[in-house]
Length: 491
Image (cartoon, rainbow, N blue to C red):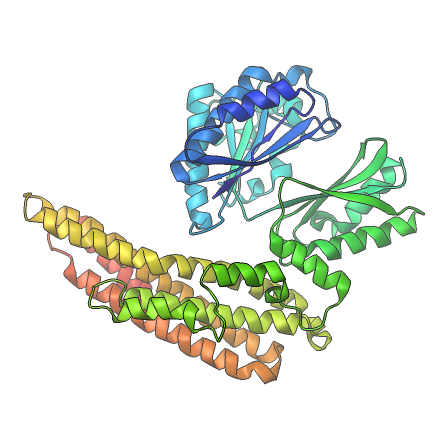
């Protein structure tokens, strides 16, 4: 997973160095650091596993509270805390829900250790009003300091209703990957940048998944934007819109910048947009093809080498991987096929009227596909935990509770697969009338795979429920609730 904390210091390198040093712990890796003197802000990009990335973020917030005094802070970027915002982003084998749990843990620890009030935002928000960062940060440090104790809407999610005297308050959350993208104009008129930002941002009728504002940076008007879902609102489309809007005021872009990192897919999309390559696919890129070959996902002579190891593992005389992993793999393939059909149709002018729906489907299928792929290993792992619990049960009097706890997890994995497979099937049905009919067979195959995943996963759910030992009230409630969820999927 990734964590991209933003700190309110972009001019004093020694302070930023100290904050980065505080976050250096085993298992957390620094990918990037950006400092901006005009905004007086730095952005740190970390990746790592759960425990390490959580602790690194907490320590960074603590060090920032020691070094940054918001009562003396000035800069173009809005801010409410020394550590202003700390988002967690799922990258590989992690769900957005996992990141929500991490955000809540980190928020509670920040309030406990440093007496800094914490607000939760985006996917971790405790109310719809707090999903958008700008709603929480309205009035900045000074405005929140004046209202936090008297305005119920300003009550933090963690900590007391008072800002830290110098470190302010911090916002922690979970979100999808965000691209911080700025466009510089050949004018110093900040009003032009503000008008363009208003035209392109979602809150004032512009692009969905775009947040924007205008600033004066390095003597140039800057349109500063956050692209919160680049797959549905590509960066190239945003740049073209900024360019057109600027022309209305006799201005034009002279440069743009990425703050932090950008996914390779976003650059590939921009290349496809501007080059207008027919039937573009990421596998046409030499480095992508090479990585696939070196990673064992592709071989000269066909795709068999990529899937054959998994099939051989299924055929081996071992309990795992088994039907649960196969069901997850079927669901992932269904999502992949549907994603391909939607993406290829979106590129065609014949389906431009369906672009918004296709983009939404593509984004959701990508998430479902990743979650289903993660479940392939998760199902096998949960089975191994169950076997370990059964062995331990022979040695303890309350072993049944341990077995049931393991079975609950082993049941939750295929239930999640079933729910995701059912959602994939629903999306595929909706894609039929708005995609290229020449790819109808791909959608038919996708539905068949999704239904196979659903059937197989629910079978695993039921067999695990049947293995639970009786006499545990919470387990009985779990069985009832789980069977109700399964029944809804079969309805």
